[in-house]
Length: 280
Image (cartoon, rainbow, N blue to C red; front, side):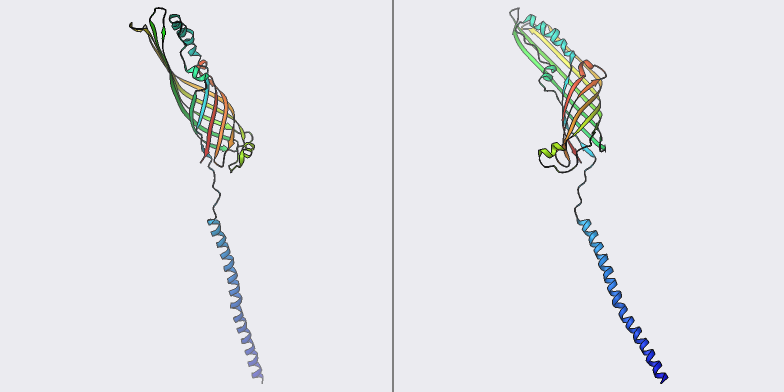
């Protein structure tokens, strides 16, 4: 009887162990399934993050093509008005003053193309390198009745040019416009940011003037050609504004004054700039 009781106890223990062993895989399977679901969820999140388009960043580098309208003093051209024009008028009372580069300046026609590449250093500072070239001539030809009863033939030509390069810095006291999309004129104007600019520029400037005058059939009594070139260093200070157009483009305007370290009587100038800033 004791042997049967012992066998029953052993059988119960074996059944209990088997029950526990059989139950264990089910709980382990459930735990593994939960782990797999968690892992699958993480992997799905990673895949979703990789597939979701990320906002396109804006580089700190920018291009800035522009046009500069300049108003240089050009006081050396006063010699033409002081000597050449009166002399020709003395020979031919109907003679009209010749046109010069100063006349183009007075007609607001001295527009200089400018190109710059720069980088934003901080939310308030930008540094860039700029360069450009401008050149052109004005020619005046005329025939006027002279005091000697022969027509006075005159031909006057003046050419000026300037190539330059320099370093520029702009500071934005209230920061730069945000790189985002804008809607409507009001939104753009509200986000316009003022700036203070500084330019240190080295220019190679020159001129060539030709003057001819004569009465046919006689040879010309005036055949004059003068020319010269100079290196001119100038410092510009200006105030302006960046007007946002969209995420990558802005309209840039400023007005300032060029202070030349040499030949200031010719090259000191008011300068007005209109440009288009594009971020990469």
